[in-house]
Length: 283
Image (tube, rainbow, N blue to C red; front, side, top):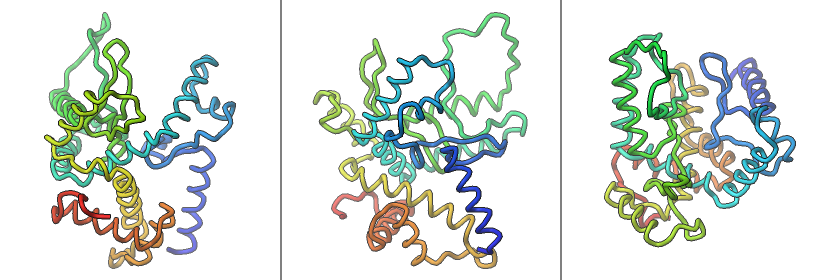
């Protein structure tokens, strides 16, 4: 990188760090992504309140603060990272995602939804006096995108390379919800029947690696930061990346040994290429 590019990157990093942003979208709006970058629950409660909607009551703010703290302590965020890491290595997920991305790219500029993409809201009825002009291509994309999110238990796609999986949660009168893509632990409080049903569904859908959830959470971050490094920092002439330097960079970000980081990167590449189908038996 040139000195000018390095200065620009550092200033952008300082901006995102100051405001706790994940990044900025094409419309210059801040993007938040707790999977890769999120505030620590260790921040003061009053500081936490500053990032919440101003109309939230004190009780609501406190409940959300406590929920973030519990989720952090119970590794829920890390297990959601794991689900995303497994998905990006799964060939069916990537094929369906690529199909949707093509539909999205083929939409006219005025109809194309802006990333990040959330699953569309379910409405039981349309508001009265609602003037609706259907756009067939957009409706078809939305229908297929919602089906995609429902099957893979996604809140949406932060980017086309970064899925945002659901965790376990309570559906109120409908009872608890345990996605088959999310690794459940005994301390989560789900009974054996619910956990077994999720495990069977996971097995039927080819997800046999739930015991390796910590590894897949690292794989997600390796995949994400490697794409950033290759797309933004590789030589403009050769587009080649120094893998040794890359492994050192990734290991520093993940706070793991470079040898371990290299092994995880190679496993990730083999999973994506279909050279291996799981991490069972690998350490």
